[in-house]
Image 1 (cartoon, rainbow, N blue to C red):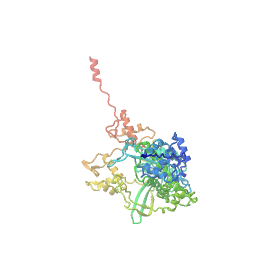
Image 2 (image 1 turned 90 degrees about the horizontal axis):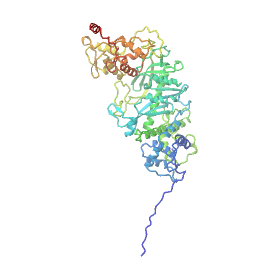
Image 3 (image 1 turned 180 degrees about the horizontal axis):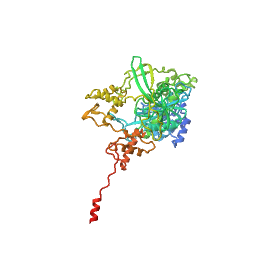
Image 4 (image 1 turned 120 degrees about the vertical axis):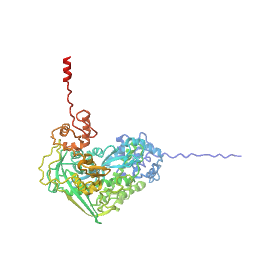
Length: 640
């Protein structure tokens, strides 16, 4: 009997050809903005070209990392399936997830950063609506501090842990700083890093991107005098909101109510205004604005026009919303090490810029259309569809704007309507979870019926202090009396009701303070100075008579602007030798805006023995000890 033999066969997969291993290297229709020639040039420049040609070359790795940003909710293998879904008939590689992870690690962040620097820049033409104010292209600085990375040891070692008011954050967070074109919301430049560095630290890295044809908009976080002088040094103009802590000497008053001043040697113009928005339901919200600008001509640039222009700064917030929530879906980044986080961030910024480029190219074909009407969500979904259908050829009619552009033009958003609402978020750890006491905007989004801008006509007055570095000419004080300050109003309210204990909020309402939070800080400061009495947490009263608090601190004498910072401080300390002076009491008389730097210097002078430091945060004039009386000792010696 013959015995049958079973023969087992082994199927060996065919090795992809050299051209087929590059086939997954695409980004759908967005490949027109990142062609393979550009990717190869970036790889060559950064020295990340593969040593040997295998199934996953470096060019494919660049497109794969970019595709990860299009599908943040999918894993490596599923994203690879999207890349090769339209390549039917080709023998494309089928890598494992470990092979794709190793591909990312081989590339590193350098080629993605170089690729972003190539595609970053202004997107719209100057004639496009909403892009320019007069001859300047409007751009804005701002930071985003809500980008979360995986809670891994290496990420924590780089970024640290974020402290919230209710405890430690669950994930380390990244601070992203961008310079955005407000008209198109395109990114001109970006940098990121740990939150231990402030926003101004990162913004200074982007100053080289500014030029004489740009107008910089920024909020109160960027009102540092040194930073503003650096912006002016680039030749760019700026329009920045100031905090209430600035005490600028007023110069010439201009016809529109603004006035001239000087910051770090730069001639600027100060605009103080109240903006009142009235809703269709009768709700009115009012806020005060204090703007500083290098646009000095009140005829060419009226104050009211500049106040309304400042609102364009919020376009960068819309850009962050598109990046953080629409593109990333609010998810935590993938990478568990700093190199991977940097690579992922540069890829996301590059992908965001490519989508904005496609949107602006489409909108500019419809003359007179504002780029604000282009939907980022529509462009994103169309880009995802075109990546999956990579093998489908384009129609002849799609060569100008492409299918992404056609989708954007077919789904233009309606013209933006003016509306307002209270600033609240549904997050228990956010400072905007609950309404603030001073909030006057409605809880729900309400259409705005009218917006009124009232410019304050500020009268020139003698400056509160004169800067040592940039003396300001003294002006004649006005004949009108000085309006009562907040402390005077608070004293008047407290004296009208002797013995009553006032809560901070009701005292702010009685004095007419606009910002309750800032007023609470002032109350705590006045209590430390002894001008009012703090009975308990958030409760204050005024004690008079034998139980009255100690008198207010002495007023610093005038200081010669030519003196050094140390000599000026010694002059002030000698005026009241027994008083323990705090840095915030000395700084205005010396023309110093950075109180922290003065505090550090005072501590150094105390260590050198130049001044006394009775307690932390205070200093006193150092009196030289009298030499000991040695007459008795000498007499006894002579007698001996």
